[in-house]
Amino acid sequence: MLGLFILLYTASNLDVKKYEKMVNAIDNVFGGDHKTVKVLPDSKPVIASVFGDLKTDINNLIIKHNYSSSIKLEENARGVTIHILEDIVFPSGSAELKKSSKIVLQQLADIIRKLPNDIRIEGHTDNVPIHTAQFPSNWHLSVARALSTAYFLITEENLDPEKLSIVGYAEYKPMDSNVSDAGRAANRRVDIVIIK
Image 1 (cartoon, rainbow, N blue to C red):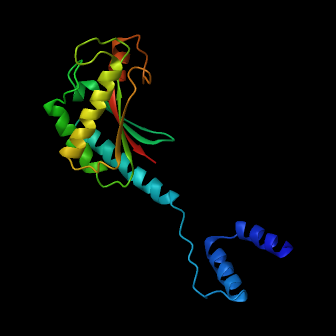
Image 2: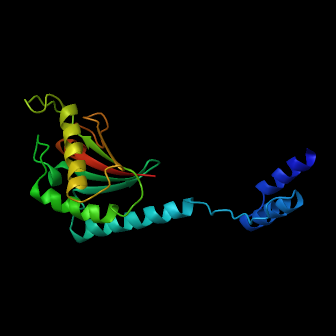
Image 3: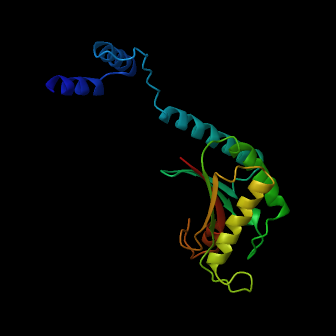
């Protein structure tokens, strides 16, 4: 029993190559099937590389097409979030994509289509109430905008529907203060979240 604990402790301090040698040696001693054990490398560097390339591609797109006032990029614990402000995708109070917004979404789809990650489309509004026949509340509007965006990406840009989900947050996850016009404009957005 003591020998087993010593082996376990030692294994926790070994590098991958030494660990592979130790496991194969133990297998030989205890009459294993003598197959070589291969330890897979840690996936974190691969994730870091994918997200690094993604951020570079999105930033290049923003610079090339002068989207700096309408598309913002953020990385946090969830993954990489592409904030697309209302002015570039939807008319005020509407969930119908503008013609110009379809071009932007096509450009983004070309970048994110190749990723294996799950993608969540999130709709947001400012805190100004909406009461129309189509949208009785900001909840309805935020969900409808997320749905329009996701549906376009699935049907027109062939993103895998199994990887996409939608959510509406109404005014309850603001990016800025709702006190000023500029702050409210920043809060009216659709987020494309590439999940880590």
